[in-house]
Length: 281
Length: 281
Image (cartoon, rainbow over all chains, first blue to last red; front, top):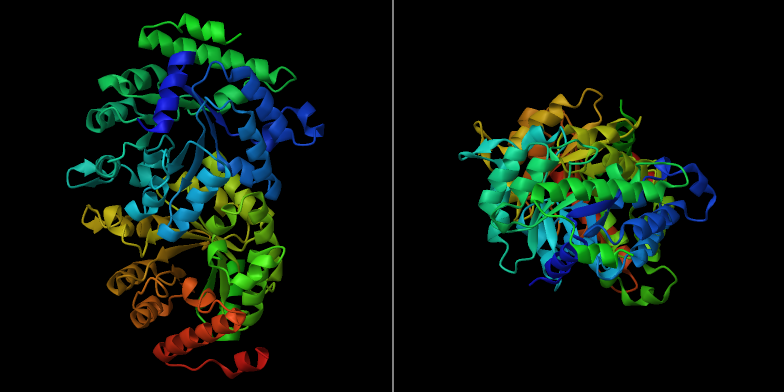
């Protein structure tokens, strides 16, 4: 089994959670009292991680929020990554896509320098923009198929040869998946599409954004995403990390995560396993 | 006129060049003697810029090659940008594309922190992934329409409603271009497509990769790209900066650039204007 998938399965079993916490740690939205610390975004992330690490199955820092900080942002991200326990997989949300020799450099940045477990990629430029990432042993990449934003309607639903563009991407990703190190980003804005994509994609892991602040239907996303023994991670960013902006923001994040876990596990028809509660001190 | 376009027009007139020098300054390909300097990539770029600045119309650093260097890479890029004369436009090759609040952060990184004149973007996620960049006064964005790599065949040519996906992108970009701050990336691997896209896109600036190391047909790219008074930048990266790897690498780059300028200007039917030679000391 791919090393990322293995880590993810274990993290989901251990915590009983399908939630990936998105570290979209926007400097402009941080609790005010953190702004006087030396590295406010790191301080924020450190407390969020400490409060949520026993009850989520992955973390997903989005590179944009670190790059906006300039040279220091990359340092902040590296320090943040050191706070994440080894047994929890890290997905770098990068949505990169470029020709081969350039893609190889992005892969270096993400797998060698940041030592991430997985990455998100944009498939528009085709296989040679994906391939350099797959050369990393133990690597895993989630390919954008269908996104949950309004602009998804501009191109992703265009019909060609009887199926929408995003289904062409699903088909190609299946073809490219000899080493079982590919998954799909499948937005939750329209649950019927999750069903359609799951029917085609087999058990392949789905990273599902759009169930938090973006308002997609959580219950249906879980039901359809986990059909056919499919594996899903429900990414929630703002809906967890920016729940409260006072000194108890980390507690607020933990409470929000607990509510999501509860709602998700109601749909799954199972409670959070007792072992998770024990480990969660 | 958009500030970037204005700067570009003047740079093309001043230098007589349509060439954009791609600063894909791969650490692993640097001349060996630079590796003992404090910041080899910066040292390389500084010398390349000094040797080429009077004979090219733009520079295009590709973020991947800087991000691969970790936190230090962003510093290297900022120092490099300071070496580029104010009157030469800088295009950051980023190919970003993400939902609105995230795209806004990438825009901040590229226009506020790096102070670039233009950026390349991936349109797969639609208008809301492009819009935050357009909110920057004087900003300019080149949207990927057709790329010159092999993988371009995977999705970009899919036919929908009687036209290929890349033409749907061209049509949308035209719609989004109220402020005349959008252009297109149009790969040179198949010159017929450049013709087809120019016919549809009016004068809109094209950033044309693929005529250097990637081997596209330079003459046809120039002929078709400049039809209808269209504006083009021919990006050449490896074909200029890595021409020679000894101590005279910068001279080698200048000579390669001069050869490209000559070949391009033969097609354009005009010599490099005398004024450029004078200014070029």
